[in-house]
Length: 355
Image (cartoon, rainbow, N blue to C red; front, side, top):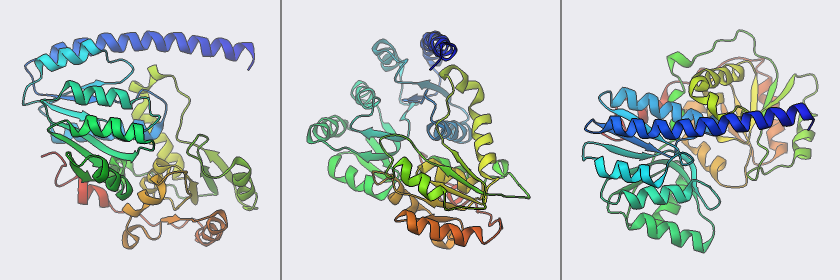
């Protein structure tokens, strides 16, 4: 890293610290202004630069606006919410208010948000709380015991899983809680009229692959697969965007739309990211889903019935199968099979989850 890059990183770090302080002041103002008004308190909302998590946040705000137009939304991130602010909410919250914990992969041993979620569950012991669709993957006996004791002690806690393996885990760990199974909320954008990007020419293959602890295949293995696509344009991308926290509130929707638009320019997406899978289906681009180190992908793709998505979504058990499937898809020469608004119609549209 050269000196210019180090200075830029330091500059962004300082500005993000200022942003976090501003968010804390904003929290206090929004809590005070919500007093006596119908309010949705939305905990563990994302600040970080993961487009999948930011897309979930965008979708929840969109659904809250549609289904609870009389409510204001007070968003509380783990990084900027103090114990004093939680106590302030506790003393003014009423039975008309609604409490939600953000969706995602938060109920996982090393996740930094998990202690904050437990704190929310403990502080609001007398209020119904809904934890929105999660991948649940607690590993150690100590963590399982800690989280199950916390959640089961709450008299009115609903935990929604976003795949069948997570629901099974929830059944074992949280028997005293209400347990539901719902798809990831970003699926509500599939088939949406305002998220259609028509590209007359689709060209090449995009690899949307991760570079973290959840990746199953090594970089060398992925590179070897890429080299097989001779004669095709091959590009690599990811759903983690290097954007300072302070820019997300103003750029969230435009970045989501840009990435989905970019996905719509290819004949094929190959991904080991769950939201890479969903974004491809919003873009009506065929996708081959690779394994990750957990059940999130293999279980998550089961939401997409073959009779609806059979021409656009495929799961590869290994890289050889991936290349075989890719050749079949590329032989279509970019022909588009448009996805219907299946998840909007079946889950998130006509009968909203919380009414």
